[in-house]
Length: 77
Image (cartoon, rainbow, N blue to C red; front, side, top):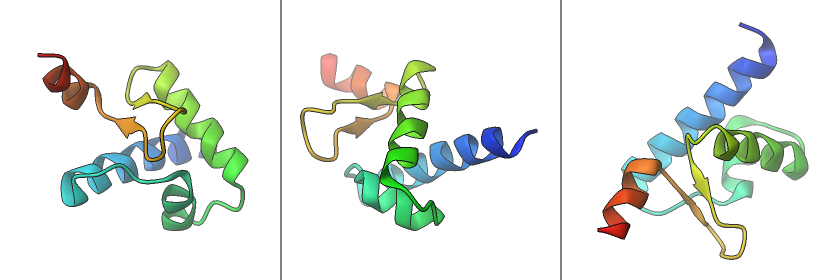
């Protein structure tokens, strides 16, 4: 697995664990700081990639707008 894919997986696990433990979404800064990523832009790019893959949902219009697909389905019921 390439380093890029490893970091993408790390971002996914970080977001998933954060949501399970805290019950609210991490901010982009939370993800950046938690994983030691240097740039908010890079962190945002990884979150966008996870969104494009359907592993997370991201609403850029609200702060802490990251949810998991299974959580989103519960909200729609």
